[in-house]
Image 1 (cartoon, one colour):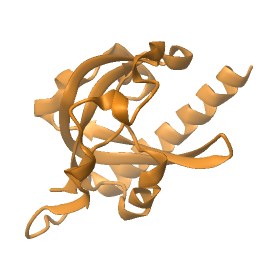
Image 2 (tube, helix red, strand yellow):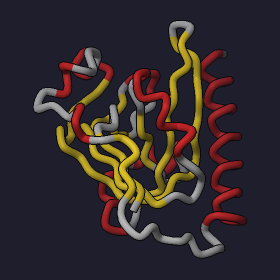
Image 3 (cartoon, one colour):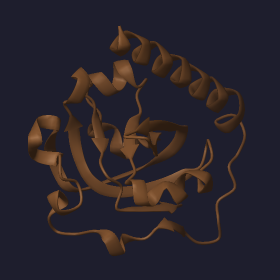
Image 4 (tube, one colour):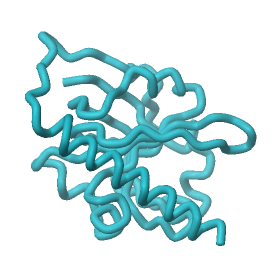
Length: 163
């Protein structure tokens, strides 16, 4: 029951986000900044992703590329509560050159977007993002096996910059 409710809520948010992008973000030109703006710096990036994502290899995730990179547009920014703490994630609709980072579950369950997870210490990032923003994200590219999600994601983001 809880999984069904969560799936329904996620579907509603995705539909709203994609509708907003189509009506607002994708139909008007997005001004490009004079130079890339770093939102989350790469100083946290480490060679071993398990050093900051303890559950990465506990059956929750399957590593695809420890140093994944995607460029695309933000289509959804979401908040959820985990262990009584606010957590944030967002969806990126990949640019053409990054479509290979998606799998069938990304196309079906996330309407062609890639999930980007943030560490709790990076909650400050969410207010800096906006729908339609063109960004580059780097971090471990994994398949999320938890709760039968099965989609690919960057978890967690090591660096985020507006491009």
